[in-house]
Length: 164
Image (cartoon, rainbow, N blue to C red; front, side):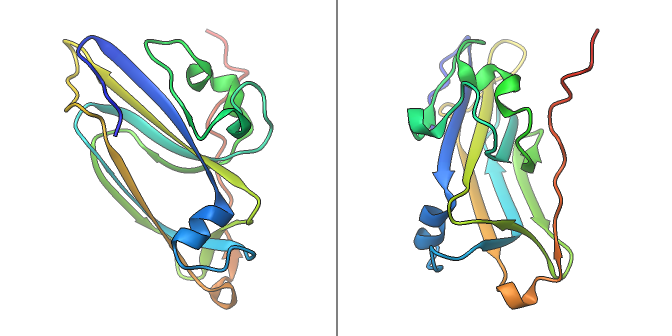
């Protein structure tokens, strides 16, 4: 849960080590997680939610804390160059539920030492109301390594060369 008082915009970044998620899910933390399904639920007021695989560290760094809050356009979690080369695992552009199962045999392979970052963005203003507090729930489902026939490629979420 994240508080989103009236008149504020909250965009927070939450970092998770894949091996720790594996342990919580009853998987072997020393082996890759073969992500095969992503389920997301969000409360009203969500602008978007992204889940990235962390790559190049710029200013947004899991070493700076598991939760990095940013409010009203300030803070590293608002600066898109921080995740310019981070592969996108999942995205939602609205409140409600997303349930995405990959095709049979397809997995997004996450290594035990990988970090993932979940970013939530809520707005509580006259143009958009947030059910306070903002809340996102995510479930990941994996498949066994011997069931993987293809590894999912991911899209690039930020196009830095666009100029307006």
